[in-house]
Amino acid sequence: MAKANPAQIQHDLKGIDYPANKQKLVEHAQQHGASENVLSVLKQLPEQDYGTPVEVSKAIGDLE
Image (cartoon, rainbow, N blue to C red; front, top):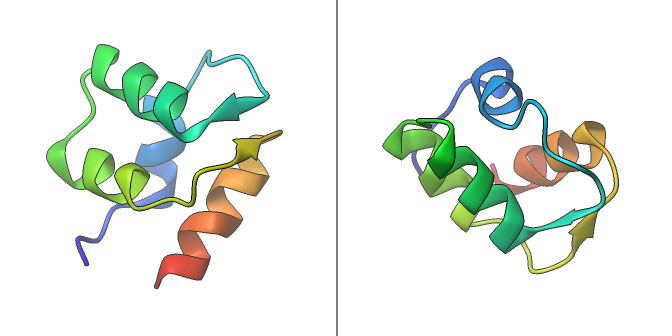
């Protein structure tokens, strides 16, 4: 799996309105110039709604 810095992921998601589903996270990151590594990680997340940045970080941690 591609590795991405959790701080970079949160930076690329800055300003997103929660709750947000996986598709919204990916689209927001793309619009804010996220790297391919960040996008790759976000695309691997389970299809669900994420209520906070902490929930996104936890889900990313569960991928590894």
